[in-house]
Length: 200
Image 1 (cartoon, one colour):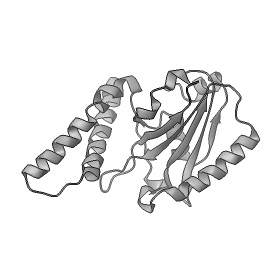
Image 2 (cartoon, helix red, strand yellow):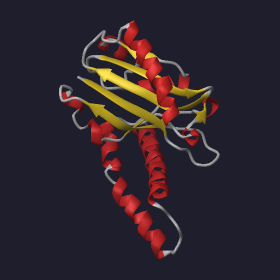
Image 3 (tube, helix red, strand yellow):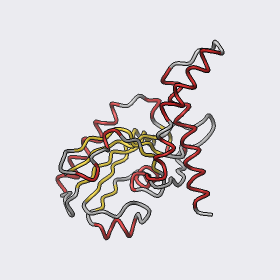
């Protein structure tokens, strides 16, 4: 089984740094039972994750065994298998990273890695220029585990709808995309605070 996802930079508030990545686009096959719901899932990740490490350092990261994963990213679920992440770059600007994981250890060969690098280079062309941020503006925080994020993330649609209704009442223009971006920023802040206070 294999899962492929894209973790994109969460647009920051004006004048701020990029503080998290949002993993929203995922495809997997039915053999990957434990990640069966990933296609409908949104997950915020930060510097504690392999994706966050890859984006912050602007280079590919490959983990081939559970032991490597535990050593490098102890905050992530241990699990079995191999994971590779590639930053999506245009010069010294990034939009996030490509994330691929499989339930087989030592899966990614040199040929796989070369092919995936070429694919990531093509993938960068699919993003709007506004999706890229200077590497100097990447300052990821720490995000809580997914199980702790879930109660907050489940409020997303209700919050978006409330923003749109409030804007209509106040007779000010607000389209759904802008409302969703506002809510993602609110959720990001709540999750960063949740992770911060859970360590105290």
